[in-house]
Image (cartoon, rainbow, N blue to C red; front, side):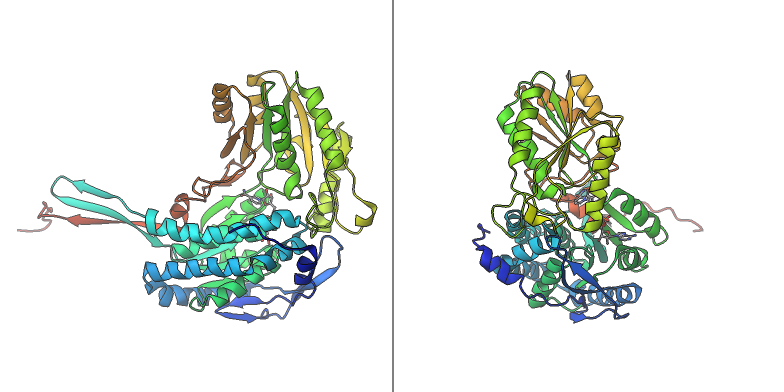
Length: 505
Ligand code: NAD
């Protein structure tokens, strides 16, 4: 998919009139059984956008019945080729709607449109990628046992996949889960985040147009504690792929224990960026600034802890302050906005509390500017927490806003220890021209994903996920097959091997 060309006027046109959002169950758009709705709020103005059907246990029950029927029926018995045809059709239809999706996502989440354009234009790739991966890489192994046996493995779909997603990159993360779940042959119930329902609803419309058999794909909007919890505890839902906060992940695992759910957990992070004195400091500055302030700081892999070598710290921090002073904070629908408002007033208050804690803990809080005209939005200016150290909560806890804790270090051993001194282990970034040190330090950081001399550039084929409290399991590439499929081994006797003859006279 190429770049989206979209004027601000056209973008505003797409969000001028937005209908209420319904649930999508068994091929139809329906109200919640309870008839309850909740308001969806624009983070830039804090005005109501629309009403969203608030799903609960009864709706999850309906969706699970429909998903089971489709799995046991048409979808389950369809050839792989035909199934992947549907997956590719979804990709084509996403491309047709991509202009509309970018402003919807920016309007709903406060993410700058420059970011949402990139994210939504990559979503169709998720579907095409998994259609291709399933046809070319979803392969089994064969085990010859002398001339007695040939044993082989196959991948089978698991059943009903429950997908629970956060609000920080909604469309990208939803498609990132739906694509492998459908391509491998499961049926899906998606529970999108309640603060960002718009593009999930658009996706339901797109998938409806693709004419998948009824019940293959379902969306139940609603609150986590109601719709999400009902999905997690449902006896007939086999797996839960969850992306969100670490504490929610623990609760979901507890609630899914009775029904023995299979879990994939993509959780929080507090990722370090380590900049040595021999690094290309200009590029490291670009990467560090982008890595924490893009996505409004609401990025799971954000480099929220900077460790800058003490010999170059003074100049680097001065340059960082200069960047912070000049980052363009503004309307998410404007092309030149770099940082927009946070998703919701509740999250804004959360991040504001952390800034208060930072002051109490002894940080110098250095902030950029928010234009006066933006006062109605949930804006936190780009923020540096200077003089931070590891005795502070603001260094150890995920803030999930445009807030960078800045620390210095003396040597490699010290910085490795500091980098690992948090409960999270999602990502890490190392900047140095010494390639041996680059590898050595990266391999010593206890995290799922490391980048050397690079910002967060993703490769869909590689395993995505975190260690420690940042997650369990890996998504991405063929690693997703481990989660979304059941591996079966078939043992075939090639001859008449000896069988004990119990009880034979
Ligand atoms: P969250 O945990 O509050 O919510 C995520 C989803 O879980 C939402 O759909 C919510 O409704 C649902 N939910 C909440 N309680 C539930 C319950 N009891 N049972 C079932 N579902 C429930 O997270 P968030 O605030 O939406 O997202 C931000 C978090 O997500 C951050 O911690 C961020 O680091 C993390 N994240 C991680 C990754 C990753 O790949 N590791 C990617 C993006 C975001």
